[in-house]
Image (cartoon, rainbow, N blue to C red; front, side):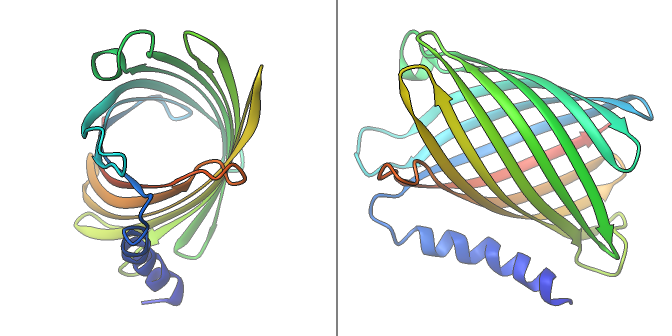
Length: 227
């Protein structure tokens, strides 16, 4: 197993272990089911349903589901492993956090991929508009990602793979100070067949890097179906 593959696996467990040692840590469980549907070789849809539940709360103000996300994303493939995408998401908060908490989110994206032997690298540039009842927040995001098989040079059905992400994010809006976030995640995945794969992972977020923001840990799971 190559060095970079070992690093991907170690990050998955090391990040979770180190985060639990912080007293002000907030922790979430986030399962997701995702459906990919290609209309043409160059145009595809993605539909997803995500639940976020609080399970580590240093304020002792309660745990449980805090919101549900329903999302749709359209991706258009371009030459030279480039793509653009448009997305819309509705975040349902009101049953869990009270009135006037729901959110509508619009997304625009450009993605660039390249491959070095068995390792695939990706650069994603994304802008978002978070439309809340009281204000609109604009976000600018850059993510560097890498993934590859754990066995051999090519991923085949019945084999494991790894994914690692590092993302920087800026949020701005009228009447609020800019907020800078940093996110790092690591996943282990299993390709069951050409139509289904399962991923489990962890993500560490530092929200408000210069505003004494709290660390946040996510325990993630995802079922991805392809039609």
